[in-house]
Image (cartoon, rainbow, N blue to C red):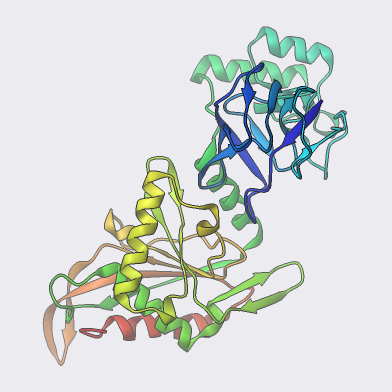
Length: 373
């Protein structure tokens, strides 16, 4: 018997969720035949078989999360071939957890999280009788073990409010990223209005924002950086790889527009359109969702003036743009109606000073005030 493990799906993507199996146990498959569709943090990927053979066992069902290096399927002894992603022996998981985690996912002895949750047989029996998923219960006992009271509390919540729906796929990864940001970043947000009254009719708002970010990063390079909170070190980048937040029904995607400081606006618009189309079609390669050095959230295309955008480490800043509106301003001692664009700049105060943030914001305002670029 040989096992096919979940291969490395790209840097920063340590796990995937099974969406659909395209084979069943007993099926004979050929090399490169698609066997399963999985969803990573941001993309859907079809995983091919590394060899020809007969499927003896599938590890996990649709909805289960599998980590890189954990088994996906088992081949029978027929037509075996050696490949780099097939291993001959899988260690049996025990109740001991890996890397301090309280769960093991995708192991050959447990297809779900609940089987490795710390709980006695009696508690497991109670959970089964009350139809409670142990994976959704936070243990209050010793060393995080689940107690009968925890199960009864969960059952009462289900009766009163209905079953909780576990976050999956994109929304799950977004929640994890936001939790990481809350734990690691020291955020400060400053707001200002850009006077864009001089813009010609039909100006591409997103392109102007991208141009302004490139200009501001050139003035304040410390904003185009990654920060390591553990080593207290930063890495200032020469190229500006801009993450552009894209809202979809499945959740938030942030594809990366590469090297915006060295591309003309026509090329940037073409690249941005391609990224958006790939996101909506769920065909965007995982590498195009990684490596952003700074992020833009143009939430004003929907609603909202100001916000408190979330910095996702290792980045140190994110720019939010609100809804364009008209406002009465005093200009040359006269009251005039002007079009303004609300801006929100959140930065990690561990890596950047207030003065640097103010100068970066001022650079944004200067570029956005121009009639054309």
